[in-house]
Image 1 (tube, rainbow, N blue to C red):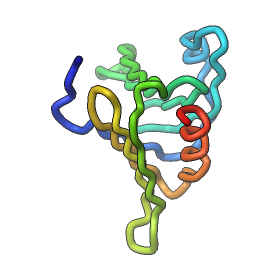
Image 2 (image 1 turned 30 degrees about the vertical axis):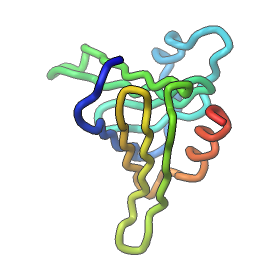
Image 3 (image 1 turned 90 degrees about the horizontal axis):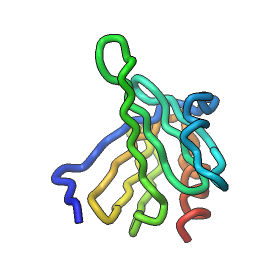
Length: 121
């Protein structure tokens, strides 16, 4: 089994349309549910996984895509933002390590929480 030494972190800023180029990566029976703007690109939540696209290089032509299959998630927690700490957080423990998502106040944490619960429980 692969071991991730440190926690991977990503930030979701707001809900956006699913980019057409990511539709080409979906498999048969997979449906894009929602997409979120990240620092340089987008994350897409489907009924089977979370895909996080990361454009690299000066021109952004190089694209790395992280895929977190729902079947690999063994535990998760969600925390909504408060008065002083406005960003919400979602932590996913997978078979290979921990992933932490910071969610801007424009992102509905409970919507994302329901999507994950629907697909892993």
